[in-house]
Image (tube, rainbow, N blue to C red; front, top):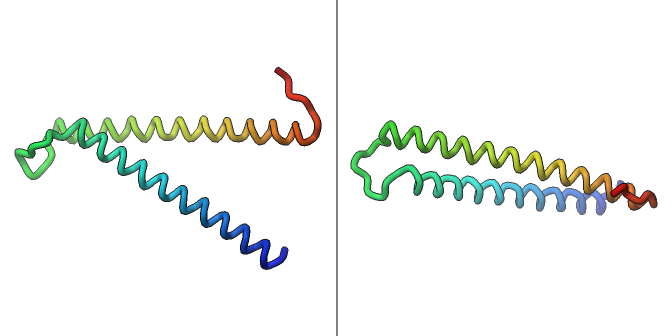
Length: 97
């Protein structure tokens, strides 16, 4: 493999990793803001979270992560199906309807 091809592949990989990190950062920020708005009143009475606030935050984050994991699995599944379909199309095999 030539050095130029290797650089090209590495650059693409770095861009992909950078986009993934940015996506996860935005997702965590969104989750934090959404769960905070839902579970913590805007005016704090105490420095520490109440038991109810803690439980609410725990459940909110848990639900968010569960949905995030399910969506990731489904998108991976769909991506693999698309790849398989593309391979078949490149081989000249028509997909069954």
